[in-house]
Image 1 (cartoon, rainbow, N blue to C red):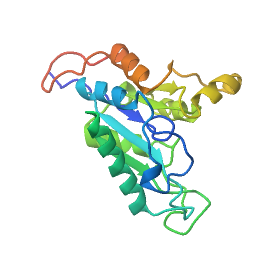
Image 2 (cartoon, rainbow, N blue to C red):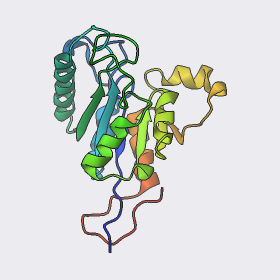
Image 3 (cartoon, rainbow, N blue to C red):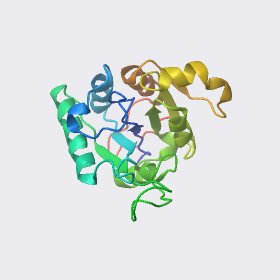
Length: 208
């Protein structure tokens, strides 16, 4: 029997994993949101791929370089490691459709809410996106999830509380769950999806 479909969790960075401070133009500006490492660690312990997907248009705007983005992401991994957590992949989009020099000024397929980073994660980790989850602090992250049939979780950290309080009457789609923070989001996801089948298992995958 074929191996069951694998699922994973895609995480926004700013406002979801790290404090929202605007453009992070130096690694020293990076700080973890309380509960973020706990949530990622729970996914790690559950055998669920935890994949970062972040727009970094500051590159296109000339605020910082791709090397700086990579340095910031390396610092993020180091900060998580101190708390026993890790991200299994870190995807970022440096583009903007109308600002900056080529090749950064382009209508790319990877800038959220377009699904390029989700599709890359699916290819690299063998994921069925319809069984995956996206966690973010903006309703656009929920739309990002729904564009590929994944479930979208809104966290009330970062911009989330303001969007939920003042803008939800204008939302055209609703989150599948609203969580106080990433730890609460991970707890709900692990309950909702069920365990990840081991390699070679003939069990059915989690319910979409």
